[in-house]
Length: 113
Length: 114
Image 1 (cartoon, each protein chain N blue to C red):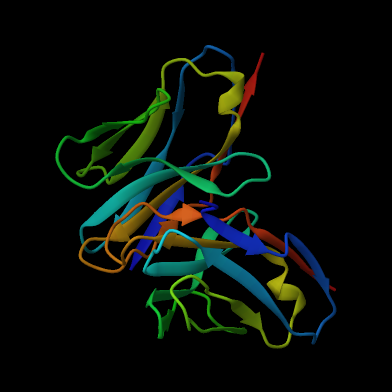
Image 2: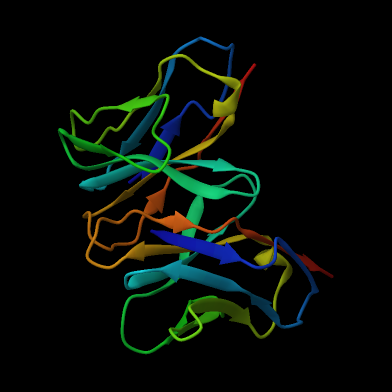
């Protein structure tokens, strides 16, 4: 039982490049979400999904796309990276969309030059 | 909308001393409250949560937090800290009856010195 896994751990991009941050969980959790963590700002919700095929925007969705084709995977896509997207990205999951303990992945550190 | 304010960005403390990390929130609806801990270079782990019932909640490693509705606070305390408690601590809320969308404070970095 690996929990929530994220790849890659580190990534450097140039402005305008695209990439996909991968997130997978093996706990059969219905609810998955993406947060970004910036110094002095805590974590902010980017997108979330209450189940396969269902996604919605969080607090800071601009510049990011998501899809949820399976229960296990919830990739986050940066279509055209900008320096403002330099951050640490965390994926989280919970059994349901109601109040449950969320389990966080180890994070992906992204630097956009 | 909800917001969370953690009143101290950094808290230095000596080992075996007591500590309090302060958290205030603002919300027009009832909320559930959480404390998460982030050890260096790791993801977040749930430390404790208040959903209902007793306003004093405890974690397995000696932390406790008390929900004060009138003061809209959820301060985290530990009577005697260890070096291993050095980490960043995040207070978070989510509105009752909604999806599990956490609103986090900016975090408090607890540094325990020998």
